[in-house]
Length: 335
Length: 241
Image 1 (cartoon, chains in turn green, red):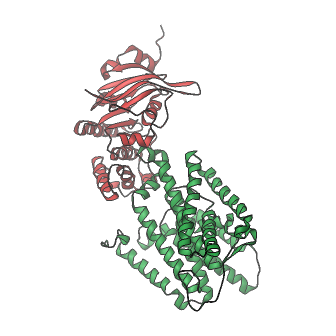
Image 2 (cartoon, chains in turn orange, cyan):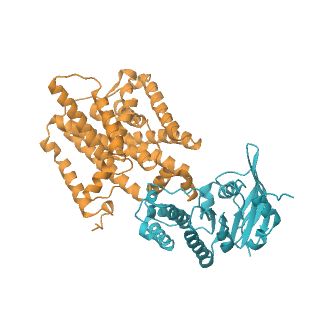
Image 3 (cartoon, rainbow over the protein chains, first blue to last red):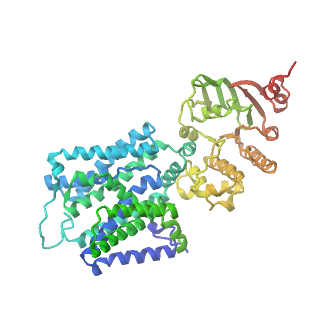
């Protein structure tokens, strides 16, 4: 039974809508039942669900491997934070500026790569290079704190100020939940429209796509720009949630890798993969750390080892990610 | 008869190897023209030059009276030339229906309309029952049909077919010949095809062009070309005197 009327849910069967509604209701009630620790983890989960969705536009849909998405997170974070600290401009306006700057960066990298036909591994290297030299550049930008970091003013307030994103974790939780849901809806819309078909065609075979009248350069550019634009608000959120920014951290390659693990483990190119991957990875990693702490063991870097192990398991046993087989079992559309 | 495609003095070399040398021919509208020749004769290079996949060193290609030389493949497809690849290139991770819909989107206003058109073409090519399958799961004959379906979905006026019969069994070849004949007769589709299967060439072609070492060595009706001494020699080698 198909549900008509709501364009956002068009094409979903009743079962999928029910499960999505249950999940959303559950997530809406998380702050009511979760303590501060669990809430902080859930914020992290939704953060990775959001940013994974944004990365998946480029890799999962259009087949362009970016290993430098921390660039767009970092640019988004720094643009919005700098506007807030130096000009008193709030994060919602700041996010628009952040998206503009990130889109421009995505367009420049995309243009260089796609115009000169830098593909595959070399494209990935190019994205790393841009993130790395931006990191080094920001290290020396004293106006933005340089390597000593940029800090947002933290003040105890009477009540939450959503407009300036100053408030308690519950407010941040709902903001990132809203962002993750919006990203999912947007990606679903993109995937089902002309641009989604063209991206998938290019991902599968750019030469055949070209022979079908698809302007491959143009649609690759659109993918790079859409993905970088979507990634920037994650940086804005990061800046206002953590209140401090260090180039060493936010532009680090580790961050780029971290954010792509969710969609890869969840299921590349699927809509729900990034969400599922974020849940599974973040919660398992935190649980592991918690368990080790209870045992009194200090193992530095255990999280990275764990990520590596998860990746290995998925590659060996579920090469398409966790979501496709799970979706089939639940009787849902894989995409 | 008006010429749909005019190829004028087209040449292309790869590092000194002359793949296509001064080739000149016209394909009349509504006619099936076959390009034949031994392996390495430059047939696929000729197609790639026409379809924009590679740029010619010299010469020009005119389609429907306009010069399309040096345009990109997507622009040439927009102009109305559809093509298939010798080694089929299906979008393996997409379903059969999605493959054809991706092609149909070029001329259709939205995804819904493109899907409707795609399904008409799938029905025409007997692929309807496989439309939910991934292209990767298809057998070779079905992949060849999918390749043709996808090219047809772009609603071309000229179709370039690069060995769509290769690897097919005789019964499947007959089926393909029948499909192409129907497309040509019922829809007035102009077809230029590269083919090794002479059965198919004889059944389909109104005109045959023979390439050898990149040069056109003969041109004419299938019957005339088949008895041309130069053609026989290029295929079988020079007779020992």
